[in-house]
Length: 249
Image (cartoon, one colour):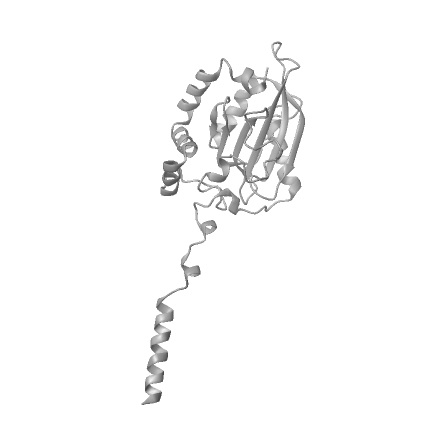
């Protein structure tokens, strides 16, 4: 009788253990989701790769370089440029190629470049100075701080740019490469940039939830759903002052 009671108690305890998974096992890994954030990804290429292609991006706008070399853009690349620039200035591979061509109407050189690799996303970060070749702006530099997010294939999935002037940058003055916690960048808040492809689901549940609580994500979602019209409207609204304000002229 005692043996039967002991066996029954053991079986009951085993059943309770199987039926009650540990708290740790019940918590899903956010980095295993298709909606993961970019900071979930680890570098898969050499540090030189990320620094070189971050710099190589600027060759597409530099008359002293081969502007026909296409950077390793992903199929769903997005380029976000903060005020006074034009917010979402490209969405998708074909659109960024088209806008790269359009920028040739504003010929420039970018001789001053400092592009570096970082082991946390965004893996590429640059401080550069544009010099435009038109008579009005000749010899006047336009400083830009720009960041590059990559997927596991080494493709650029997100480009984010700011005027490199006081009051416009996303980080405090004592953090020149935006490595601290007090950095206000959009790339690390976009659901999906942290899956292996860096592919976002623009109108998926995770994006909708994020947009409901983050006005910048909501702005991106709205613009990406009607990219050309919102880009054109932003250009019309900012064209009279963006160079003066953004470049500090």
